[in-house]
Image 1 (cartoon, rainbow, N blue to C red):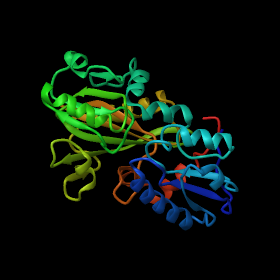
Image 2 (cartoon, rainbow, N blue to C red):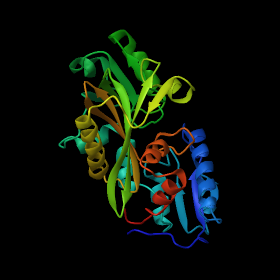
Image 3 (tube, rainbow, N blue to C red):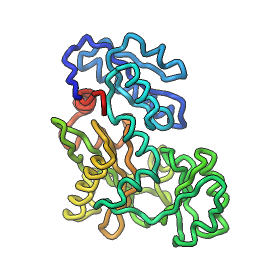
Length: 312
C-alpha cells in the first residue's frame, strides 16, 4: 500500500537518535530532514528521539519519517512498532530491514543471483575462528555481522591478528562475518523509487588516505575523496554496478530507499552490503548522489516521504 502525503497539516514524526552506536549521525540526519520538511510546508513535523518509551512518544502522529541507523532502528524493530501502531513510515519494511541489517543473511538471500559476492565465512558464538578461515586467503576483513559505520571492523594480514580482531567485532555482535579483502576502492549506489519502480542514482566513488574505508576515514575531514559520478569504472562496469544495486534492492525486499555498497577491483564490482536507512547529513552519500541526478535535498526528502506505506 502506497501513500502520497498531500495534507501539509499532517503530523509527522522524524525518528532519529535512538539507542545504537550510530546515534549521533542519526540525530544530524534528523535535524536536516526536519528542516527540509518545514521548508516543504509540513509545519507539524517534529523530532522524536527514539527511546524505550517510543510508543508513548508516537501517540498522535499520523506518519513517521524514519532516519534511525543501526540497532532498533534499521533492523526491523521500529518498523514492527510502527506497524502495530498503524503508523505509515518511510523506507524499508520489517522483513527487508531485518535481513539487510545482517550481512550474512543478506548474502544468503542474494546467493543465487547476479550479485557478485565476496568469499566469506560466518562465525557463530563459541566457534574457533582459526578453523573457519582455513578456506579463505589473507588479508581478511573481520566485521560484526549487524553493525554500521565500520564499528568493530578490522583488516588483518595473518593468523596472529585473527583472535584480537574477532574479539573487537564481538564487542558489537556475537556473530562475526569474515571476508577476503578486496584491494580496490569503495563505491556506493543509492536506490530510490519513482511510481513504485526502483532506479539507481549515480555511483559515488570514495578514495581514502587510510588502508581501507574505516571509521576514521568516514568521519575525519580530508581523509577521503568523494567522486560523483564515479570516474574509476568503465561505462560497462558502471552500468553493471547500477543494475546489480537495483537487483539487490529488489531481491532483499527493500522499498522506498536504500544504498548499496561495493568494492571495485579491476573494473569489477563486489557486493558489500545494503543500507536500508542511508544517512542524510550534510556530508552523507545519498544526498550527494541524488544531487548529481538533479534531485536536490528537499526533493529527495519529499521523494522518500511519499514512499510511506503499510504491509511492506
